[in-house]
Length: 127
Length: 320
Image (cartoon, rainbow over all chains, first blue to last red; front, top):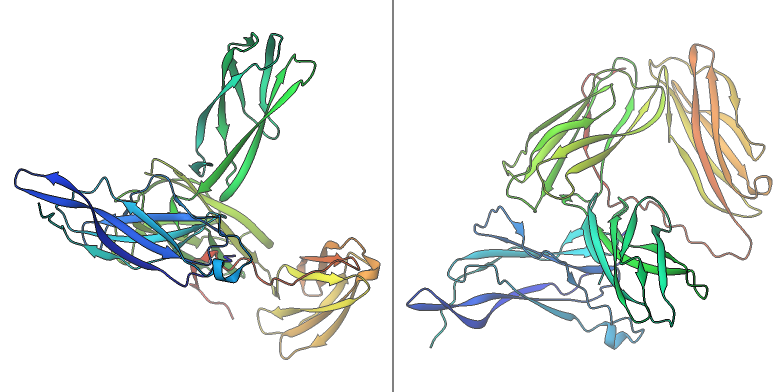
C-alpha cells in the first residue's frame, strides 16, 4: 500500500551548461527539474526518455534518483515544503528532441507515475 | 547507499577490511546469517594493521523493496570471534505492473476460464517471452502482441484446459524474457475449483478479533445446477467456530459463522469441511482469525493487496 501523496509534480526542462555540439552550433544538455512533497514511503525517482511522443520510452537512470529523506520533521511547515530534484541527461544528444517522464518508486519497490511526458526541443546556446 | 538490484540478480560485493588489533587475525569463514551463499577473504591471515579484501557473492530475496542481508566473518580473534557485515539492498522489478496476478476466479466442471494480463518493460525497446519455463498442467499459456501495438508490451493469456484440483489452487506461471535483468518472470495464478457446489468467499478471514469478543462472517454456498443445496455435514475444525445455516434463495444457503475469541486465544487457522448429500466431493474452506490481546491497539487496514494488478478474466463456456 502506498502511503505518500504527490501534491506537487511539475516537470520543467531548463538549459544546463553549454556544451559544444558539431562544428557550428552549441546546444545545452537537457536538465530535468521536478518537485515533490509528502514523500513518506518514497525511495526515489526513475526517469524515462523517448525520441518520439509515443515511445518507446526507456529508463535512463541506472541508479534511482534518491528521495530526500531528511524531511521527517513533525513540523508541518517543513513537511509542506516540496523537495526539488534535478537530473542532467548526459547521455542525450543535445541537438535532438526528446520526451521525458518521471515515475516514483516506493520503498516497497512499487513504481507509480509522477509526471506526464514532456517534450524538450534542442536549445542552442548563444555564445 | 543500498545496492540496487533487480529480482533474481546476484552481485559480487567487495569490502576492504583492516586489522586494528595488535595480533595477527585469521579469517576462517564468511557466510550469510540466513540462507545460502558465502564469501572469501584475501589474504586469509592479516597482520596487525594489514588490509584485506572480503568478497561476497550476494543473492537477494525476490521480495521487492528495501532490505538488509547480514554476513558474518568468523575469525580466530578471541576478543571478537565474529564480525558483522551489513549489506543494504533495494530490489526492483524490470516489469510493469510490479505486482501481478492471474486470478481465474471460480471454475466448475465443464467451464473454461481465460485470464489476460498485459506486461510491460521500460528497460528495453522490445519485450519478448521466449519460453514458458513452468505452468500447471491444466493451464495453457500464450504470449501475444499487446493490444496497443507497443513492442515493449506483451499480453500473457492463460486459459484453463481442464479442471484444476478441487479447492483453492495457488500456483504460478514462469516465463523467460529477453531482458538482461529480472529475466525470469513469476506470475502468481489463483483459481478456486469447485464440483457441484461453489463457496464464497474462499478462503474466509475474520481479520483481527479483539480478545473476549465474537465476530460473525457469512459463507455463501451455491449449487451450480440451480438445484436445492443439500448439506450432509459441516466439520468446523475448532470449538471456537459455531455454524448456522440460513436459506438465501434458490440453490443458495448462507453459513453464518460465529467466531468466539475466548475459545481460540492465539487465533484460528483451520479448514471448515462441508460434505454434501448429492456430491462425493467435500469442500475444505480455509478460515483464519487473529485474536488481538486486550490492551493491544489494532487498526483494521482492510485489503492490503490493492496494488496487485489482476488479469482480465472471462468465462469462455459458462455453466448454468
